[in-house]
Length: 484
Image (cartoon, rainbow, N blue to C red):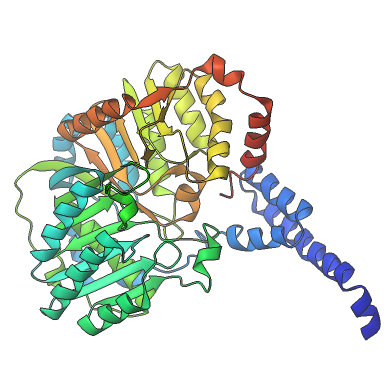
């Protein structure tokens, strides 16, 4: 018997693989999910033995139904309930904001149906263009912190800029402030020496969903892609810029990095604080008693309407995707989108096509050179279909555009961590700020038009006649689009 097993172990393993694969195929079919995604899983499971099972294990689980972590303990605390009640709008307030939000009120109600996305009016919003501007402001606010500092980042490294930020955290912790740092274990890279320094200084820090070999796992995980900083419960940062030299255009950087971030002061900070606490309880495995010091009173200097929408396997619905979908489908004049990764699902493709065909000026800016071979070709496979609907596609040539922004009709805009792809909409933990303000929208619109000066438009006729080998690469990579 042992001799037989030894001589035929590959055949036995292959049979075992297909027994499990057939079971997985039946499970996928019975879930009645998107047909394209279903076929992608079937192809991978049937034609890629062993590897297909790994892909299914990493991507095939429906974590939105079986949540990775629960938000209930945080949301059920009395202080959080009080904050959410405080941010709730009555009918008179709804009528007040209806005048300047116009038809975008439907978007507000869509996000508001998720009780963790209240609309806040008392806010100041600063748009931070590129890493240098973001880090100058962030370091200043960190050094001026008086009570606590909360950071949650996909990427944080102890390189030049990262060390400056981490040193500021250590300094504040030694002064007696409560400093908490949550970082994604795949995206981040902290040396043991820096971790030791954080420990000795009193900075509490935990990785999000630790993995054994982070350098080998790449994107094949459910990762925390959020970039949140909350300082004293009064100031918050959110956007596309991680903490790494890559995001700062130092003289020795090989690629110019174009990115966008937000600095928020006001009521919207409270929503980001709540989102941080839900993550912190998960990574630290601590039940925190949250008190009033984390939610200080807000003095209203400006009235900029902001909603914070978090999305991921911990939420009941793909909040960010649904909000973007409605913003596009209700647009009347224009939709300008910047995204480094464009691998849209069917819903987003339809929304963009319908908007463009109805006369809305739809423009999308993507990088000419991507940092992912598969994503680049998968993106290219969608361009012809978009351009057929009169959507203008531009490719950024100055460097790498990493900003994740959308501006609609001079009244609505969003800046955050979510790309326009399957991973951001369905797999990763993301967070976006949705802003209803003419001034902010016009600034972002002008930045978009400035970026187009450093971009080339994709000509539909020339694109259609691109080499067949490129089309073959695109078709191959597109097969993986629901999974990457």
